[in-house]
Length: 88
Image (tube, rainbow, N blue to C red):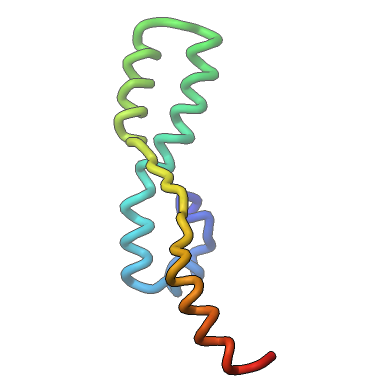
């Protein structure tokens, strides 16, 4: 259960939907580890095969998209007004 970074019992106790969501990510996570190891080996040995394998792992890794969170000021003011009557 190394790919999950969990013990066998923890994996068995995982929610069914969460388990399959994590399962879909295993190849991507392992590709990231393999790519890092490949870069070290390629730097030491070079060669065209290393470039091909690294490209394949990059494709499997995919592209991670990170979005910046934005604050909806109208919603924030509305939330504050809801709590204003409670008095702290």
